[in-house]
Length: 317
Image 1 (spheres, helix red, strand yellow):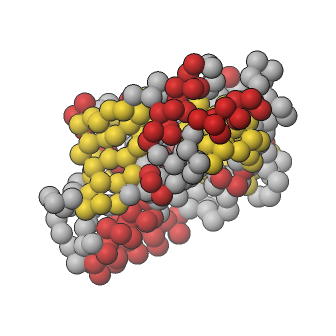
Image 2: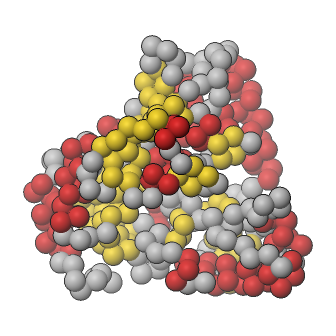
């Protein structure tokens, strides 16, 4: 696919190569399937890994002036990429510049958006900083966790955030206090039209490294026992108030329901797994089937939690 005809992708790629620093990575028709945990979908018309905040600002201003959509990509753990790819500039903060871990004088920690959650937990454990263990098993990075207010094991990302650094899509940098950020279930409003650059996060009281490691092991064991090992995008649907999407899907008789290579996990019914060769069309069709069946059996309209990259669920459901 060559993308939308209104964009000269070859020219835009050439322009960006001349505008951004030599350390920035710029690619055309970059396959996205292996950059997501679901392992499916098409390519990005242009894929960029900026090397600095200045690179990112330049990219945003260029995209805005040329009316080109920009999509931030984290570790791809909550995304379904369309089979046709995305007609956009996909931005990934993979450069080490965005992966900082700095313990501040007050024992708070400054972290970059590109830092993997697993690495955060490892570094915090070594430093004897407790309170981040619930994030260890989430296959994402800080930026994605902030954007989605990621949660697990009873904890939420913004429970530990002190301040949030972001850049709006017009290239303006902001630092916001937690009190000025609007968050909810799997959502941060301030990042709807911006990209997270990092945060200052607040650990709990200091703890011995071996104690923190034992708690991480408890959470890791719980995840291994309750979540599938096949490629997935995490929980597909949001939990309705006072209920569980997984329970509703299970009682509707949908475990192991399958469309093409996409199947409802028999380990956790709120996961759709890629059994091999799945397409985004398979996943979307299975999502439709699940919603219809749960509505019929339980009278509940499940809403997707996973993101449809470059699009929205209303356009396909």
